[in-house]
Amino acid sequence: MHWYDEYCSQPGQGAYSPHAPVRALAARTQPLPLRTQMRLAHDPIPAVRQALAAHDPLPAPVIDELSWDRNPRVLATLAEHHALTGEQHTRLLQCLDPAVCRVLGRTDMAAVLEQYTAGWQPDRPGKHWGRP
Image: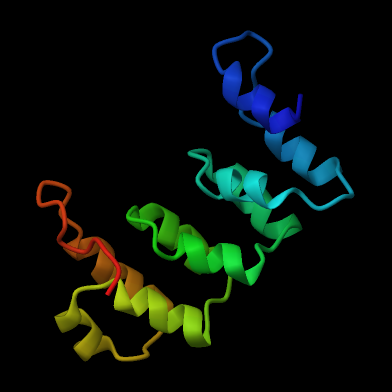
């Protein structure tokens, strides 16, 4: 069983440590499979996402797909650990409210995500959801 599958399937066990995936990421020499990278990019433990970003910059197609994620935390992780430029930046802007896009244009990603997160309203599904 892959270490990440084991990590996901046995979180309640005494041997579970939130730092085990970080150690495993730092110790390995081979790149992770894309499927595992995508799962790690959604991991609730920030150190896991940071370790992934440090050791395995996500391939452009994976970043591109994750940029459609509905969770602002995932988008913030992408922006923080991966330089989103060009087409990926444009597509992320397209996920935002059109009024925000008009104001922000192609400004820096931190401002984009700040506006996006501030406007995200979980009690109003669909506010920022969906592809253009």
